[in-house]
Image (cartoon, rainbow, N blue to C red; front, side, top):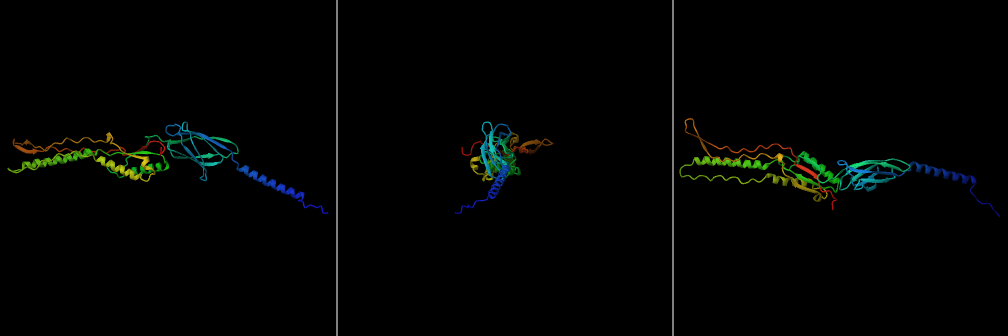
Length: 317
């Protein structure tokens, strides 16, 4: 009977075990080299203007562009807490209906142990009525945007695109008191017609019928009313591509500042004639009454396009 058994030699078993141990050691060394401990990051989000705490949404994206964390800061005290197990430079995005979207960087340290990091951030909180734009937005007495106006439209369009819940109020303002000048022009024309009518009457021969007396001008409509409508239409066209713009943008026709008003026109004097004595006491030429002069329109520098933050709330609240 053959009792021999085919066994792996002891030396062979030792070599196999030794190789396995070396492989395990290599793996453990590699794991240890790339091991990352937990990093606890906390801080406070505050408004850069008032210093008050802000509640908002926070997105964290790694260097590869992958979103690895989403959280919110506390509405009452602005505090936040995030726990990360991945080192590197992270992009932190602050967003929401109550803040202007902003991005910042966060350096997560490499560590094999638990580590705490303190990191505060400042954002621009949204408060209803806060002014975003105040410029001379249009060409004089026109609905055509000026260079400043076009720049403002671009700025606000970008803000609205990046902040989907943001609302704005847009106000258009006239450049000057156009109705005063229009009234003065109408009165001047009336005075001219009266002067011609009086002159014509003096030349009438016996039996001739006098021409009809000129009619005093009616109240002149304020051109700024139509101008405001045109400017509002121009703004709506400029922001027509804003998503949900009909819900997020309001348009208002503002009034002319008192500093931009012009003085009232001089009172109309009809072209009644008066006689003046000549050098020898005879009747001289008829003296015509002076026609009113149009008021001098001063150049104004007030803003004609204003944009403020609208009601701060979620879009579909």
